[in-house]
Every structure is written in structure tokens, then in C-alpha cells.
Amino acid sequence: MMMTDEWLRVIEESELLSRMIVSSETAEAYRLAHHRVYSDPGLVQEIADFARLKEQYEEVQRFGRYHPDYSTVMKEVRTKKRELDLNDKVAALKVAENDLQDLLDEVSLLIGKTVSESVKVPVSNPFFETDSACGGSCGTGGGCSCSA
Image: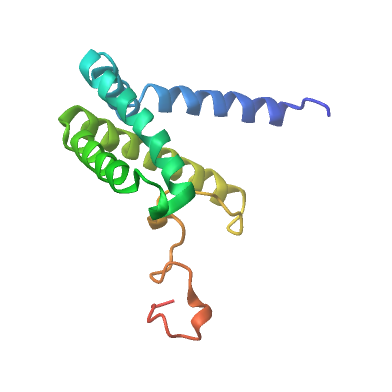
């Protein structure tokens, strides 16, 4: 494929856009939250312990409630996850991750819609999936009570 001026401009603009995203307040907030979590040795150890517990959980899930440690592992996983979720640093990291993902979804949608209105853009947030009020499930014959 020949490199044309148009392709060169697209590449330059995409690099500019990526630099803008990386230097945005949202990305900086994510980096700061990530640093706060992973610079705390106690919290890093808790996360590692939870990862090991998740491996046990996956083994238990293969056998279901017939596994001898089913109740113990299920309770431990829920308790540990709750502890991590209630940690202020972890909660801030999750919020920052979601904010950054929303920014990336918005940019992806803008680029996709610029190309064509019919381009399907995968997004993580269902709010961005469609402009209709029903969430895109109008195959029910009007039973979804949307205003589309």
C-alpha cells in the first residue's frame, strides 16, 4: 500500500490524539490512583492474597457445592473482596479506571461515527452503546416502551 498524504495526516492526527489522552487529567488521575495502590506494600500483599484466593475459588467452581472447601472458600472470597472494595485507595483506582474507560469509549464512538453512522464500536459502558432510550432491544415489537 502506498503512503499518501492523507494517510500520513491520519497517522499524525492519531498520534496527537493519543498524546492528548495520555496527558489528560483523567489519565493523570488514573496514574496517580494506580501509584497509590501499588506503592502501598500492605495493600499489594492483600491484592496478591486475593489473587491466590481467586485461584482456589476457580478450582472450587469446577466442582460446585460438592467440593469439600466450597463454603469456606466462597465465604473467604466474598469477605476479602469486600475488604478490598472498601479500601479507599482501591475504590479511587476503580473510579479512575472507569473514568478513563469512559473517555476512551467516547473518543472511539466519535471516531467511529465520523467514519459512518453504521459503524459498530465496542464500548464497555452500555450508556454509549446506542442513542435510543431502549438500549437497542426494539425487537420486541414495541414492547420495550422506548421512544424510538
